[in-house]
View 1 (cartoon, one colour):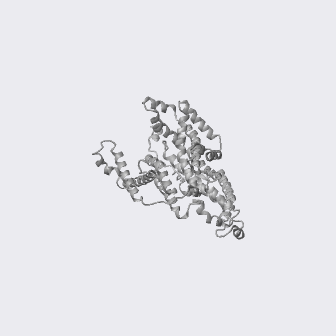
View 2 (view 1 turned 90 degrees about the horizontal axis):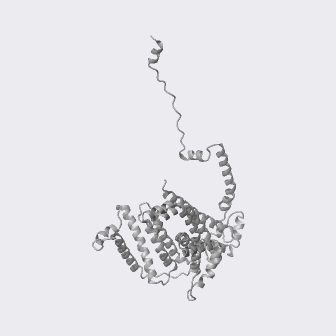
Length: 447
């Protein structure tokens, strides 16, 4: 018998391989540092160089702003005698109220706070996941909130129309939060409770009629409750500080996008009059600096109105800033429209969809979603550029900061107010940037 064949038929002995080493995880703070900052020798050297440079830059700034700073003093001379190498924050503290509200009376500043709180409450549901009809909430806020804010900030005797619109804004805000509370409790809206009664009178659009009836009742109740309340008049000339800066930037940011969309669509129109009017408007506004547009609005805009009609400087500035921002936004929107493939338009035409329906529900949502970074960049630039209104005499936060340096007690205090304003502007701009990144991730269809 062949011994080789017998050897092959024998049962072979199983020899296990040695265990593999455990997988190195990169979770936790130490794992993140090793992965992002100390992954190899070059990353380690670059991290050390960057941190060393930051230390050299931030150490003197920290010592000037905090370590050697003076927080309590009555004059700038006293600050210099206490710590000549530190910041004199004692000169900023007495002016904080003016930096926030300008010359607005102290006893009436609660109206400004209430107006901004109501504005935040109105747009807060846009960040809630369970809030429904967010587009309607945003549109109502854009249309009604200015009337309510103007009624609170300006005060005085107002027309019945203005009072009713302000009360309707409060009624709409009340219904928004009632619906949110009911939605979190049982998943139903307020309309669902009265819709069965409305169905007896109207067979179609019962939800819309139900909402309008509730809104009408809420508006009437609020109008009756506050009918006897009168607000003291505060002239626009007293508005200033961060309060005025937020009003100008907020109105211009809200108005810039619709103006830009209209001008962008007009520039792409097949109608020669609309096309060339849009082109001339965009190119004319974009070819001059913003300060020129502001001066022209103050000097030339009153020429187009009757002599009996008096325009305050704030209205003229708002018109100029909105037009300037809309012209720049038009080119941003036009770039987004050109990025949409032609097949989207052809597909809509093949289905028999009209021009406006195609633009509103198909093209513009895709274009605006792709242009979120550019749009927010324009908003941030606009927010910073609103400080130019101080040149034409509006007491925004920049002009109020300059007034600190001409105060007899703080004469020559220039650096500290500018540093404080820079930090404040960084907080606002960084918040806008972070929100845009979050919104971009949420709207990303490929996530």
